[in-house]
Image (tube, rainbow, N blue to C red; front, side, top):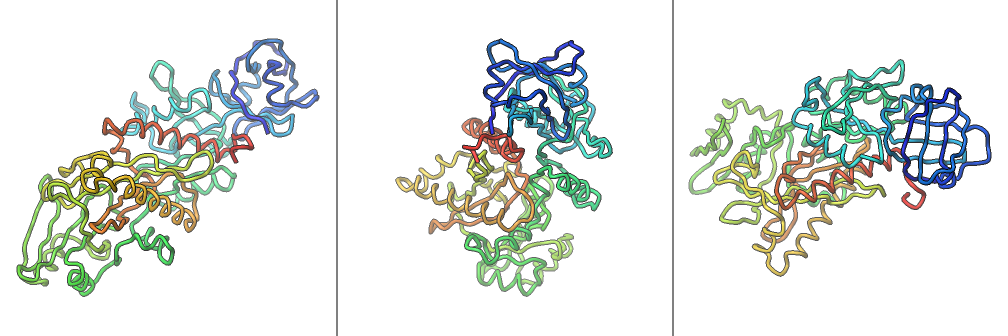
Length: 454
């Protein structure tokens, strides 16, 4: 197997022949044959080939073959040859998301897609698409590509070599039609990773009975009032979290003080609410009247986390796969809770910090050792979830906490993690690295890799 990059040009000659520079032909180890097969995605074209005595790695393709293969642009990209006569160009990488026809086609995700375009430049053909853009009968997709001047254009290309799922709607992903849509890629042997959003109990089931389960706080789905009271008696505070929630919406922090009664803390509109109840029955009556249907909630043990200024700290670990199919910690953000807030989210008054700032302030000389242990825990959790999940994963976000005994806890796992931690000026480099890792993983899944990288 040989892999390199080349620049694609179009030739106006009518003959059905591609032209390769001698240097490119040597690198690809082309056999002494009269014809080769050129591949892009699932499209192929048998063609003659001729050599050009010209320096560099260049491929010249006639218009007829450009049209047959639906090559999206004249650009540099990866090219490989397995057996001396089958030449693959690409890979075609599609990000599955919502797309509009505006100048901001991916909405709030447009800048992320543009980052991906920059990373992919010169190495792959990258585009965004929505489910309605796919034509299964013709095995094509009309993708949204980036122009070099900063704009966007639409182009019909073959089905991609790999699909990176960033569909933003939990509701739409639960539809049977969406599951069937994604299954059609799998049936065509097109890798699709990050299948769907996790629900909180999914992670509990994936980790239960494994060595990584030690990082999970005591949790109960659809908790009864008896279970909630018993957990409060044991732990003194717990969290009620919506099973399909995200961004901290709908979370309650319940606290029990033997001398003062029961407390409920939650977010209502733009303010933090704290209520006290003399008796447990009063607390439960309030929860029921607040439309907190316990059948849609998980009760989770509260953990006394490390603090700064009496405000709890937790950490967002952003993990990705790399070109060697290994999990790596691409970035870590430390989140300091706002005063009176149930969560550490910035939108509720939380503050984003670097892990080094937090660790040195709390653990001093042991900072590096504690952070290393947390990274190892995150990798262990990712590997275990991947081993037990039936779908391909390439990216995970974990909300981890560290208690006063340096024990590590995992509160949340996200298969489509947000990227807000990379807004911190000190974490922009990690943000770029995370995009590079995802691109490299797409390269791995699409099998555009040299043997030494397997």
